[in-house]
Length: 137
Image (cartoon, rainbow, N blue to C red; front, side, top):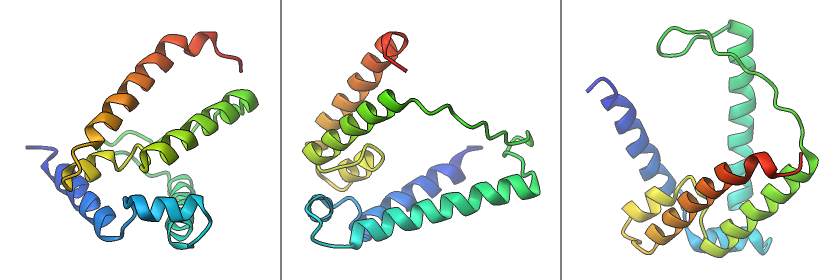
């Protein structure tokens, strides 16, 4: 029960995603067709919150829940890998109508077809783990 508060936070976040229509296939389609600002506003807000959070972590040397220092190491830029990975991510998002993160929230909202997307994402992650060392940098 130590992590029950995090489970509740995750469930609350899933409900928020549903209510904000962030997981709506229609909203995602609007974004990819450049018909509405809704999703760009949500994504932009998330980037701003993330950037501010990282700066606060660095400035105040915040610690994790276990009391360990949070270490933020910059990752090297892999031009080809980032480009190919981003294209694959975008295609998957456009084809399924869902970013990988809210797949569970969409499934929980009653769209059981998204179980196939979860299975596909899991298989894709597994395959990536197998071929990662052979990919160009």
